Image (cartoon, rainbow, N blue to C red; front, side):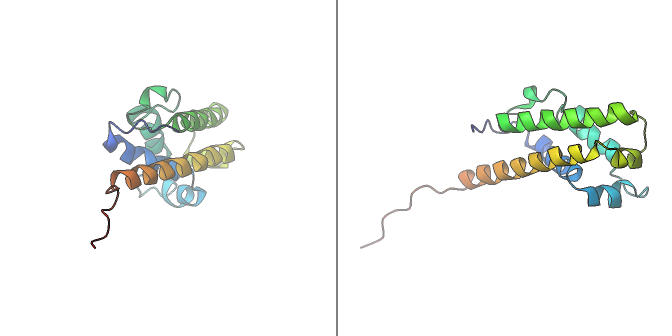
Amino acid sequence: MKDHGIALPYYRLHVVPAVTALASPAWQREVWLDLERFEDLDHTVHVLFDDFCDADDPRPWLGRSLRTEEEVELMARLGAAYGAVQDAVGAAAPDAVYLDAPGWPAVVAAADRLARVLAANDRAASDTSHDPGPLPPPAA
């Protein structure tokens, strides 16, 4: 799949951890439900829907904070899964209600798949950006 690059790498540095957090139920319960921590579901949602991407309409973010068409498609699936839970529990529901919602496992699964693709694509891009090219022939 074609890598369109990242015009806004700073944005990607927010998107990847937010997706990873959505992929980790243990993180969600340990961090988001701890009122003394900064990160919570609201923060994560703002990263993915408002600030550094738009999971409801991720296509414009291709080449900005998303590298490939596959990332765009998977982000849209994540947005749809999250939207279904939000519709079911209400936008103002506490984080614990979201985490206990019947549709939450679909959010986690969509985030997990996307997190794996984001990481693989970043590794592939890093490998090619550090490739020194062909080695010179050995000295005779």
